[in-house]
Length: 328
Image (cartoon, rainbow, N blue to C red; front, side):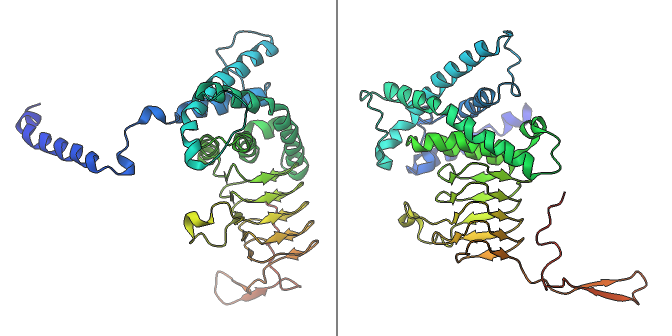
């Protein structure tokens, strides 16, 4: 404590200088923290939604009821109550974004937020319908999967897809901030970044998943399979906010497989149905249906340990030996 006492004047000066920094009226100087959504509360809502969507897999250790339907009643009511509190906080951004939730409620934030939360929960059967197809696609598409239990409990791709389907329904209800908070939570725990505005069809399968990026105006059809490191992004974002509302990301039609490391960019880019995009492909123009896109591989040179013998290996068709590798 002696050192602190001796430097008390210096510490006071430092504190004073920092406090002055908050008086510059910048965006980062805002202190109205009680008008912002709570990240921990949003994460808690996501985890309660996981229990509702997969009631036999995500459990609450505090629940002592053996009647699963009684637990579901509690979880659903809890989600409606806590989500409505968070939605009420973010509705202040409604006018700024020029959106209209159109729920027909009175012009009162709490009542409007409750209305939105109820509408969101009304979509739970739809979410579960889509996720059941995603689960089936994952089992059928991954020979390493032992069963559906393993997929639900351990596959990051299904977890990221599940949270995205929740967030997408809130996005469709014009709820600001919270959908993105949900998908960024999924991003932080899975390494998979899917914008809540992206439209994704049934039987969606993410294999491995780490490093996948799917942009906000992306449209993905049914039976699409995506591997790790894939980017479905914008060709350019140099226009900044002037590009808001413009389709900047590709359309992926039905029955397409996109292998690891591929980048597909641009709002006018369409990947035709039943096409296969090989690893590390860089695509900025549309691909017709039933196409197979691969990179022409460089010559692979192998040297023995005595550095005297050499061998060159090439594919017969000049393509990469690993461009469609399944890693299974």
